[in-house]
Structure formats: structure tokens, C-alpha cells
Amino acid sequence: MLPVANFHTLGAGALLSYLWFFENKITFNYFIKNSKIFFVVSLFLFIGILLVMNNNSLALSKIGIIYGIRETLLATVTFFLLLSTLTGWKGFAGIVVNNRIIQYFGKISYGIYLYHKPVPFFTSVLFSKLGIVTKSSIILICSYVLITLTVSAISYKFIETPFLKLKEKFDK
Image 1 (tube, rainbow, N blue to C red):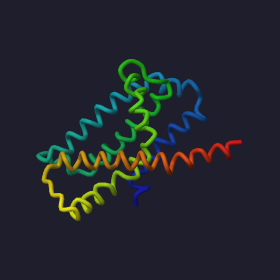
Image 2: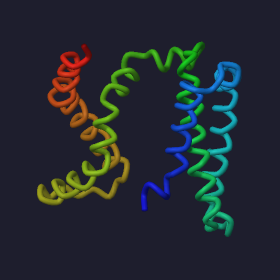
Image 3: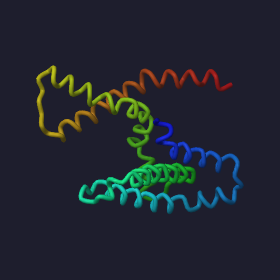
């Protein structure tokens, strides 16, 4: 069910790959030249759809097509974000993406992706076993984020990095 439900994300990645490898450079250069504009427009549309979906008073947010539009816009935002990185970021965006901390989050992002779901579950179980009770969602969210980042950093250092070093032996 998942691949069918998220087929648009596969399509966005396939389109980017096609443009990069097979399409003539005129079409690709048009997308590259305007990618930041497309990114900003699709980002605002995506935020607008999120606002519509979160407004429970609107019956429109319950319609399945709005969900489909949201998912497609998310794929579009990601597509143009990736396309924009090919030309590099200047100004404030360049300062942000070239920041060492942001770069490190990029390195551990796979771990963040892997652990962001199980950490809250196991943290809740651990808190329960230790008798730690909090009704503050801010404390819970902060603990989830800190634990996820810590586990991701440890995973990067001791699991991912040794495997990345193995890759050098096979690149010849």
C-alpha cells in the first residue's frame, strides 16, 4: 500500500533524475535557473494547504483530494529544494546551509530518520519504569529530540562511519 500511496514522491525523484541525465540542457537549465522561485512558490502553497488541513472548522480539510494535494506539494517542495542545491545557496540561505551545525545534522540525518519514531516510544516506556511523570509536552518533546540526536550521533560515529570507510575499498 505504501508505494502506491506515495507514488508521487517516486515520480518527483524520477523526474529530477531524468532531467539530470537525459533531458536536453535547455529544459534542465530553465528549471535550474528558476528553481528557487519554484521552491518558494511551492513552499507557500504547501504551507497554505497545511493551514487548510489544520483548520478543523473547514469541511474541506476532510476531503481526500486535499491530502493528495498536500503530499504532492511536499514532493514538489522537496524536488525544487534539491534542484536549488545544485546551483548553491547565496545570502542568508547560504549562511544557514553552510553552517557547521546544520552540516552535522545533515551527516546524522539518516540516524534521525531511523530513530525519530522508536525513541518516543522507548523513552515513554523508560520514563514509566523510572516513575518519571510529566504532563508537559514541551519537556517530552525536548527529551525526545535530545535523545534522538544523541542516538543518531552515536550511530553515525560507530555504525555509519565504519561502513562509509569500507566504501573506499570498493570505489576502484
